[in-house]
Length: 341
Image (cartoon, rainbow, N blue to C red; front, side):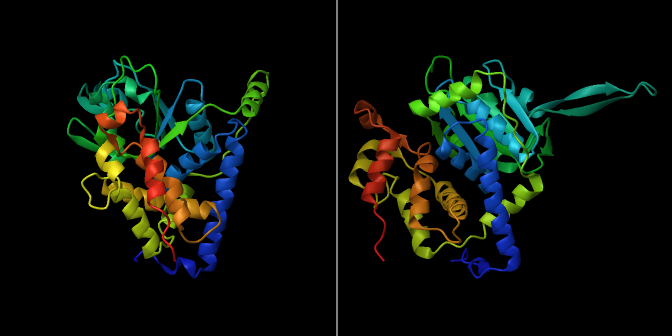
């Protein structure tokens, strides 16, 4: 495959980059854990989105530290951070910015001046994104995909790196607006935050009920993160591993001849080609995080659930039997076993 570059052969420069990547990843994890207790899998997925250059949707109940996690992570990255609290009355211009008329005090002439909105940041926290109407939600689409936004017919570029980390509450659905399928597909991951174990919950109480507060240090910067994103794309993937990723994605489509019977029974629409691309990219990051220079079948399978759970649309048969997307994906991975060498 074209991804099988000279990376595996290794050069001094590449080895230095890989070592720096692993040191930075460990440092980010160490700094974030000064504030966030547990949630190792969640933090790993958010960091994976960071190194891929994608966006992450965080789904969890109130009080599971979604907002705190994003804010803490942005502090460790040394990036410009902005937060938007999505509400029913939020307008697209509140996100993108708007043109205003300014008058020159000397000449009296008037000119249009663009005032950038909070979308012009490196890390954008879209808090409770499903509480605003689709018109405003869609204001993020162009930025998430094209790194730009259009205001009054003029296009403005958003400087990379740019990450949208959106949160949504799976309960209290009254007065919310489900994200459009096109926007959901722009998110690399749909990461689920669940309740902590009792021991970790006790640790949270110990950390947060005193006058002391943890200080988080910056461990990297924007240019270095962009270099890590280029490094990730150099990680080789064997053809058999890439084929396994594609087969998993294609099996989620009920119209595909390779899909199992339970997918045809319970799924209306499966994942797109973008899912296969994201699955391979995120597996490359996981390989580097685990200290390897190549992608394995396990990397692909470990990333399948957060990549695919928001890209599969179940039908009324699944709803009537109270089946979730995660349950369908568990069955799918059991059905699609690792090929024997």
